[in-house]
Length: 95
View 1 (cartoon, helix red, strand yellow):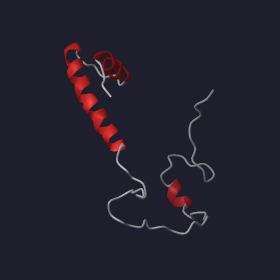
View 2 (cartoon, rainbow, N blue to C red):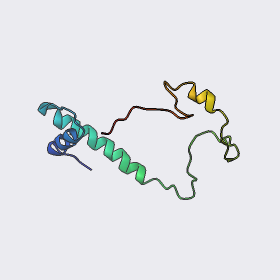
View 3 (spheres, rainbow, N blue to C red):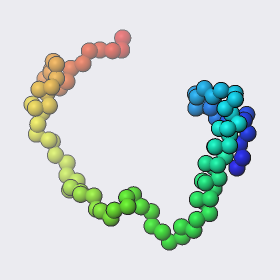
View 4 (cartoon, rainbow, N blue to C red):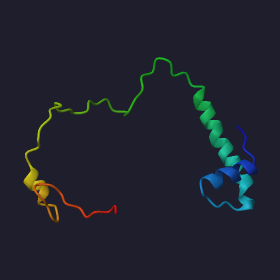
């Protein structure tokens, strides 16, 4: 996919990047090369290849999904500036 200077200028505007007029043609060539590589990657046959999240096979540690009350209200409220009746108190922001 070949990009022209006006397309690059539009992309730069959308990305809020200032690009000088004399650099538009060179940047259009570079972006066209990048898009060419992406198109080339789309041609690779990935049928039967499992998706990967890492190059190393590992299993994430997990814990049982149990609902608890935490039993640490006093430690949490120790961080509060002014706790009221066991809750965080915040100033009113809507009038």
